[in-house]
Amino acid sequence: MSFEIEGKLVIGVASSALFDLTASHQVYLDSGPDEYRRYQERNLDVILGKGVAFPFIRRFLNINKVFPRHNPVEVVLLSRNSPETGLRVMRSIAHYGLDISRAAFITGKSPYTYLPAFNAALFLSANEEDVKSAIAADYPAGLVLPSKIVDDDDDIELRVAFDFDGVIADDESESIFKRNNDVEEFHAHETLHMAVPHQPGPLAKMFRRLSLMQRLEERAQRRDPAYKKVLRIAIITARNAPSHERVVTTLKSWGVSASETFFLGGMNKTRVLSIFKPHIFFDDQLTHLTSSPGGTIPMVHVPFGIANRRPA
Image (cartoon, rainbow, N blue to C red; front, side):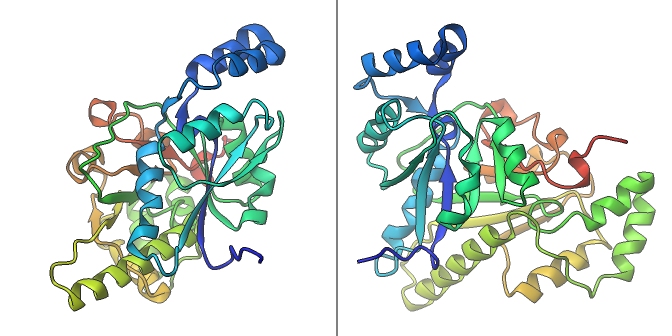
């Protein structure tokens, strides 16, 4: 019987994002692929430590426990390893009880080209070249940045935070601002177009699907007031009034919303992030991702749009 993946929200994750491969990668850099293979074989039963994306992926997979009839989410391992060197990763996945059974081992090549085959709405990797290549090919991808791993077993909630421009929406408005670095020009453009929804950005599909699952949770809570939600979504944007209206227009046109939305008007986003405590935060600008409080917020750079183009 064939497995239908089209109706699922699928995330492709590289082993470099899911686990701490610092020691393995150093062996590869110092001694080459043959010694790397031997190192992985010698350490086949040594469980890998958790990577930056691990707390997010673990809770993301728990969505299937909330909706067991539909199992609406899927995680696929997309790896530069060969099947032989990838055995340690798969054993570590089994050790942690992660429900990940599908994998693509590309043996030294970038796996991003297979994102459409798995209907992936996101590719997470710590390999900058792979992520940039995926974005250049119009695939949704994010670069996991180094941070301290915090994974509280008693915290079952999944908290996901998104920037708006260049992440959920396209970079049209960001392009207006970047033209002259003029905030007033940006607000004037957004006021003029406040009734015109944005085109989708690279993570729009993921945001929409998560928002719909959130709506299902709201229905479940109306049926049973004791039901405890597991999913919280936040939009944290540098926009403020009057440019906030176009954000609302866009989300309304898509039929979705966030649990919490913050229009910060240029405030440091970590002031909100330190309270919301997301298990992952997506932003297209590295300047918004470099000063997490204590380095404990898992930050993901989405290298999309004008904010990531080099000046001519």
